[in-house]
Amino acid sequence: MAAVLTPPAPSTAAGPRTVSRPSWGGWRSRWPLLPLVATVLLPALPHGASGGGGPADVASGVAVLVCVGRLLYLRRRPLSATAALVLGLPVVGFALATVTAADPAAALPGLVRYLQVFVLVPIAVCLLLRDADGFRIVAGSLVVLAVVQGVTGVHQYVTGTGASYMGEDIRAVGTFGPSDIMGMATVVAYGLLAAAACALRTPRNAPAWLRPCAAVLAVALIVPLTLSFSRGVWIATAAAVLVVLALTGRRQALTSLAVLGAAGVVLVGGFGIGSEMIADRAASVTRVTSTPDRSVSDRYAMWSAAGAMWRERPAAGVGLKGFPAHRDGHASIGLSSGSDTAGAGQEFRRQALLSPHNMYLLVLGEQGLIGLTTLLGSWAAILAGAVRRLCLARSRGHAAVDCGLAAVALMAWQSVNFLYADIGGPTTVLSGVVLGLAAWWALSGPDRVSAA
Image (cartoon, rainbow, N blue to C red):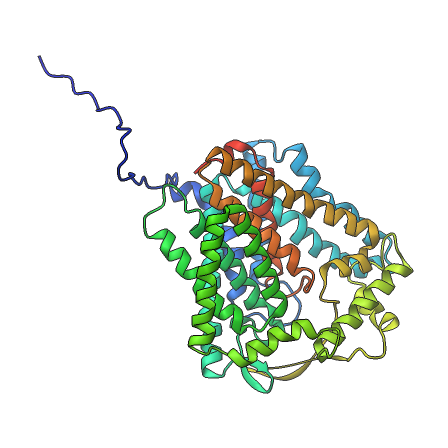
């Protein structure tokens, strides 16, 4: 009689952990993620400063259409009641600011843009992500984009082919050009935070090389981020990193801070990467009230103008896209006509100041207290939900903690960065992707979030 072979019982003794490869379910089942990946990667393509939609905006539209098509075909309930309320709440402020604007037709393009970035794209991300592996694919796309832009930015600094900064063409701007100097810094920060989250909590089924590779990338991306000379992005990235480290535990936080400090000393002190200019730029953060430079003075003037618009129409604001038309009537005479841009293959040009470079004040001035309350309420609910679910995932030993860390880091970064920036440029649509990633983690069902 043939012997019956029975598999041995799993050993409970300590030993090397067997690494299982992720069950991707085949790329055929992942095809709905392709428009999201394209939305992340396409901002790297050079795009004219005409203000029209770029390739990434087209890809985001395709993602929304794919999402709608799948919902109609599969006949599934699209969102939970909580998710629909949180993600749909800003529509109230957008619609009210449009219909109450002095020229509703002129405000209509703003309504479309706000719906795209803050409602439709985040909802599409939430619905197209099936599980944690889908989250990691999109987050990995952010890292790829950051590496490409970071390498380009460092090359610009080394060869003197970047944007003009203090009389030298050394400012790292990647492929975004001097007309969108925040573009490269934004995508590099996204990639740095996504890589750092993977390094801090690597997925259980990941190959052994992933963690050290993610850690090296996170540290290396500090270089182009520094060479961007973008003070607001520096502050937002530092705040997001500190938040994430605080949520990983005291021991790992202290170790990570020591590594980051050593890397900073080596990169800036040892190799002298822009040390003088970086030190002067960092010191200027503390001089904004004593001897501010022209960019800071203009920003204060535009902040004051946004506040004056709100005081004039406190409930619904002056209407979407209304800031440029009402700026001169509310700004002080100290506001300059524009900012000078040059370098990175572009001739000298004067760029008009059409926004206050503060998302919260822009919303307050254009949408009033109603618009600001609905938008902030939505974002606060997403951030609070993401932190809460991350704490639960850590305590229960879920395999997707890396996704939670990335979601919290990206949402925290976006919240802080909006104090110094607003929407505009080819990277605007990435704000919607980031909000969607954070919302998926905060609002999706536990079966989808805990999947590995």
